Image 1 (tube, rainbow, N blue to C red):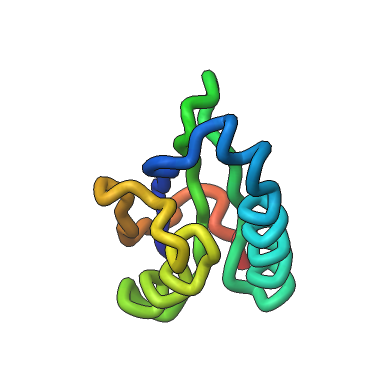
Image 2 (cartoon, rainbow, N blue to C red):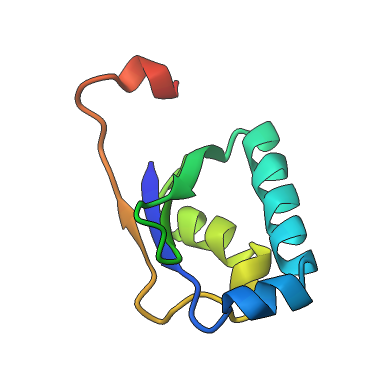
Length: 98
């Protein structure tokens, strides 16, 4: 399992209003990844500052990175360079993710 902590790099509120397809495409991608069993959960941090977390189920770190890189935000260059994918091991509550 991997955690992707992502921050949009240059997409401002005005840009989001001018280009709502960015959010629509990303939401569609999230739904597809969830349907495929790749995305276990995701959501923003609060207070909302453009950061959030994606919990990705993958065979290894490279596979998780490939999943994240297939997202519209990654393809469009809208993720900060500081965004990272890290491996995470569940100790308590593992059955919720299987």
